[in-house]
Length: 415
Ligand SMILES: [Zn+2]
Image 1: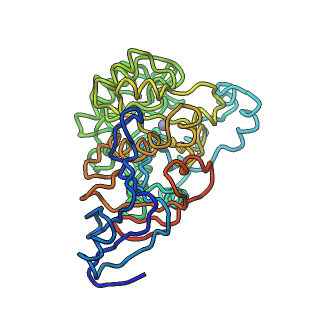
Image 2: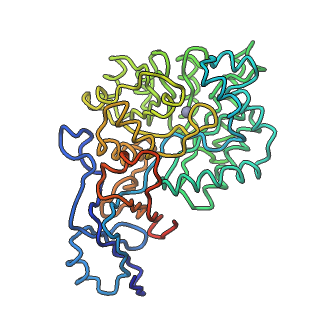
Image 3: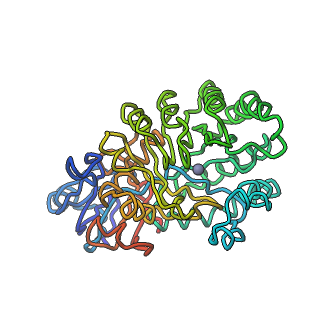
């Protein structure tokens, strides 16, 4: 490696450089935007130029060079849907679930999301930071440089604020880039079961204003599903969030179609997430809006479901499709976005190039990041991953194998 004082870094010797700026569907071209025979010049923490190495070496003879030795260079992955701040994993439920005991029965025995709520309420902000940090580092080592994190295991004003403050402290460490989402509407707390309208009013009148007051969340999200929040409640909560400057997101049509995708599109939500049971009308609504369809295939995999969200129909209709992990302590304890890409290819019929674009550019779109995050274009943040493979196809193909060789954040090498 040649060091120089110019502050420029030249990444050479890549088998492929994926810009991730191609069309959404492989039918229309190459979604990964692969370029071969080029090097990448990084300056001031941003991608500056993508040109043949010989040209760049002539113009930047003082640049520090890094030999990618035949690997694949992509933008850092963008995981646009996680619940990464929580207490313990609920592995004690897994033997029961594996044998087919229903989620309802597990909840009746004191498990499920309410177990995570009880657990988080008993922990301090410091403890939440300490528990989450190694998880974020694992995600980083697997290629994720930007991720969204939702609150939603507190479900009281105090416990939701505690979670979001923990997320803010983790963000300040600047290891991964974090985007915070307020998900006080993750579930109706047990003590509000008889008067759910009171909890919706608490969200609208106290929790959302308090979260906004401290500037703790960019997005407001609701778990809309039969048995959780209704369409009317979701609309009230997301509209209150909008009044306080939080952009809407929606957990929609996960297990049962209930008009979630259409509602997300109508409210101009950044994304509608899950969509395992989306209707033809829902696909149409997303395709004719800017709302991103965020698919979470490892959740359905881990829950043992046999059918997945209709990724191909969404792509064919013209919707923007993102892939995320849904990393959480119950239904998707999966921190690996590359593994979610594998599930997208093997279970939903996406091509590896489509899955890569869905885990980069489209993830950034689901977080409304407009600074080039998720792409490798001049001006984009130099959040980059060097993969120890010879082609983009191998990233999802090398299922569950750690294959990152180096990760950079804003031009600084961090792993
Ligand atoms: Zn979720």
